Amino acid sequence: MNWENYQTTNAVSLKGYKSLETIENAKKELKKVRKELAKLQDAMYAEHKHSVLICLQGMDTSGKDSLIREVFKNVNANGINIHSFKVPTSQELSHDYLWRHYIVLPERGKICVFNRTHYENVLVTRVHPEYILGENIPNIKSVNDIDDSFYHQRMKQINDFENHLVANGTIILKFYLHLSKKEQKNRLLRRLDIPEKNWKFSAGDLKERKLWAKYMTAYEDMLSRTSTPNTPWYIIPADNKETARLRVGQILIDSLTKYEFKYPILTDIDKKELNIFRQELKNE
Image (cartoon, rainbow, N blue to C red; front, side, top):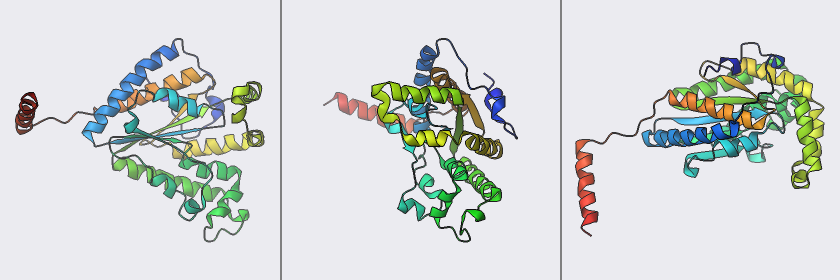
């Protein structure tokens, strides 16, 4: 399938992207995708040349957690790591803003999913510039020292960071789960109405919701400036969770299949040794 309609352009306006897509039998189709993804990861692990970094971004309730659970269900547990980045710790703030992301990057043969990513450093901090002050950056004395050029410089640094990873064998796939404000309201209400989901609700969700327009502006600028030929962003309609999961899975399969991961080919000497080991076991 051609995924151009899901990829970002140079100047992103999220109003130009649909937030709702519904595919019949999405749940059934996802089962096939899961199995194929597991096979690809197994071959990639055996080949040991590449790793995969998957970046998931989206507003609260956009379905990141459930997407991870459902799409990667069949992948060998030893072949995948999930990292969710919260408010930086004091140790993390003692390093540059990319440090905590760098130290958990996937090793060759493995998939790593960033649930919220290094892009939080140009999204949440752009809506709440006061958070930058906690990084104790030289020449940043107050929020008045933080302007658009500061964030644009960070985006350039992130592009350089990702290009470096790609040049060294990391395949980066980035997904923005495009949720409508109306659907977020419905999902927040479900958290309040269903007792089993009450624990998920936070008063902070409503505070951030009031800043929706600011977040959309920050996302549009970020998506426009950090979608590169090596690491494009895919904007996934997220109002229907099952369809969103399938679309992400399909893009993963199509993208990774192109690398033609191969299992190691045994030499004649390797094969002779295997025959010796086989005979030894049979003779026990």
